[in-house]
Each structure stands twice: as C-alpha cells, then as structure tokens.
Length: 184
Image 1 (cartoon, rainbow, N blue to C red):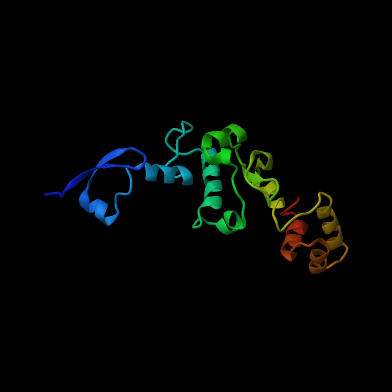
Image 2: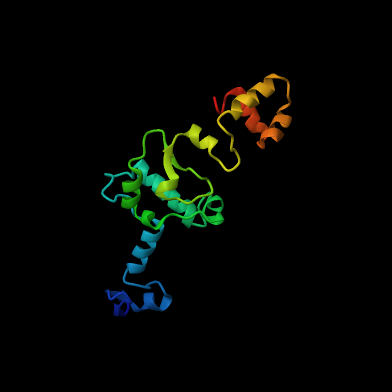
C-alpha cells in the first residue's frame, strides 16, 4: 500500500495528486510552479533556449556565470559582484534578451563590464579578450601612456617599489609591465 493520496489545488491554480505523507513532511509545496519559478530566477535548467543543440553555448555560459556571480551567495566570486551591490538589468533576466543585446560571444572573448563598479547592462558591457580585461580591473587603472613610463623608470634605475608607489599599483604589476607580461 502506497499511502493516502490527495488531490490538491496549488495557489497558482494548478492541480496535482500527491501522497498525504509528502504534504505532512513538507516535501510537496506546490504543483511544480515553485520549482520552475526558482529555476527561472537562478537560471538553472535553462540550458537551451533554442540557442544550442545538446551542450550550452559559450554565450549562454557567460550569461549563466554573470547571473551566478550576482545572484547566488554560494557562487565563487559572489563577494566581488552581488556581494558588493553589482546587479543585472531586468531585461537580462532572460537569456534571449541578453543574446539580443550582446550578440554571440566571439572566440577568445568573455563578458566584461567597462566600468568595473557599474552594473551588468547593455551600455556597460562588452565582449573582451584577457588582455583587455587584465587592464580593466578595480586594482589596476593605468592611462595608455603610463606603462611606457613605468618601463622607462625601471630602465633608469628606479626600484619597482618606488615605481609602484608613484602609480598606485602593486610591485607585481610593475614587474609584469617591465617583463612585457602586461601592456606589451
């Protein structure tokens, strides 16, 4: 015997048949609309959108990662995005709108916010390569001519620590610039 079953009408108007024990233990909370609503809010379960066949596309993965960083407190990097108030424009709550605004993700590019303190919205986002993104961080803001100045100072005998202090960057950043690892 499987137990008593109940016909239930959900708050949304949907009707389901469920076990009485599931209702009593709180395992059934809706007709399934709650799960769908949660999946829609977090982007979980939305891997196709008519955009891919089989595997999610790189464009969808970028959209999903953006949503995770801003909305899921358990996501890697949440403290640097949603945790410090970075939000996603309402239109981008659906992948289709994001795709219409940003287009397909080009090869070798990922989603980048132009103003690193700004929100995810069409006017503040672009597809960028690693080099561009490496130059566009909250901790490294140099004018276009400053890397050449840093190299010149290093070649002139200034210590990296002194140069770092002059430009407000780390000693490691100065080293990267001098070696040509950044701003080549």
